[in-house]
Structure formats: structure tokens, C-alpha cells
Length: 257
Image (cartoon, rainbow, N blue to C red; front, side, top):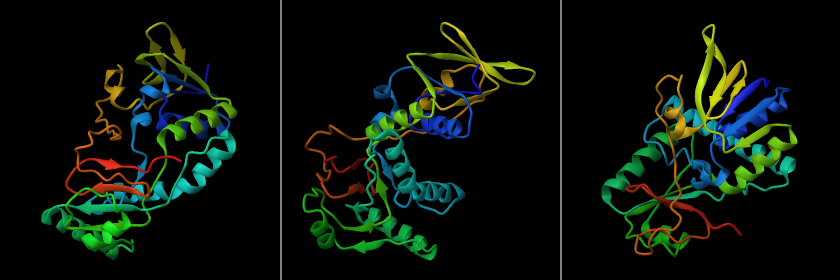
């Protein structure tokens, strides 16, 4: 019997498993597929709270604090696993192709400056000097130097290695069907083939979580990478920094070297 069962082997599940194992808990991670099936594998890897919010909020504060932990955290993962998650603090270019989108960027920068955060407004010409391969017709941009990114596939590999070092048991290809209860609290999980007992169960299976019985309703949140977009789409083919456009929902990330 393990101290904790974690359902889901993506970044969230493995991060929790590593932390608990480092505090002396025995941990079992159950994942229905393999790392290449997870949302984390397809994520864009952006640590970009400033460009992803329009208003200050407690959630924004949480995201900002989380992003600031990444340099030391990824360094630890590299040392433990031998795999570099490729954390890069090259900043993010937030571009606009319409006046409405540029107004949004200006509004965001205004309240972020008042909160002590940094971001620089750029003219279209200045943005193109930074990223000559931008294919959008620009009305302006902002350079947010504190926005960073990792390579999600490398991060998953680093977390898997770090978990192995700390004694976490990871089982792939195991579909959790229900959370078991006893005396009003979690008592383990039932899979399609067997039962696992534990006094603590953590659900970290993302969009698959609503498929698990015995849970309260939840709203899953995901992110996605845009690798393989048609060449006709107006994206930046950048090798310098992550780039996103204020009006659309896609981004590009620098290629790993």
C-alpha cells in the first residue's frame, strides 16, 4: 500500500509525485497511456502569465509566482535526472495585427506597470527588427522580457527521471475508473483490472478527469502547441524567442537546439 496514489503522469502529476517522494512519502503514479499521449507532451511550454491575462487577479499572482520558481526548479530537475528541461529566459514578443488588439496590449501594460511589472511597447518597425521573420502585418507589439519557456517533452523526461531517482513507482497503460471511499474519505482507486488502496488520492489527469467516478464536477484547463501549422498561417518562424499574437490563440516557440 502506497501513502499516496496520483492519477495522471503529466507535468502536474509527476511534479506532485517528486515533491511528495522527496518528503518521505511512498508514491504510486497511474497513467492511462504513455508520456506522448499526455497534454503535457503537446503543450507549448510557455511560462507567460503577463501575456495571458487581461486583469490583475489572485490567479495571475499564483501564475507569476509559479513562473518565478522555474529557474531553480528546472535546475534541480536537471541535476537529479541528467535531462535538461531547456528553460530559457529569452522573453516573449506579444504582437498585434489590429488596432483593437494593440489597445488590449496597451491596457495590459498599463496595469502591469502600476503593479511593478516590466514590459516595453514597440512600434511595428521595432518588432520586425527583433523578429525579422514575422509574417503578420503589425500595428505594434510589446516585449515582455520576463516571460520564459521550457521544452515540454524534455520537462516530462526530466520529471520522469527525477521521480525514478526518488523511488516513485510509475505504471503506464493503467486506466483509473473510480475513486474508492471509506468513512467519508478516499480509500484508493479502482482500475479496469484491479484495486489500489491508499489514504490519499490526487487526481491530475487533466481533460480525462471527468471520466473518473467518485469525483466532484470539475472544469479541465489545457494548453496546446501549434507545431505543424500550415505554412500559409500568419505565424512567426522564429528562432529567438516565443511569439504570440494578441488577437489569435496560437503561438510559436523557438526550436530546440
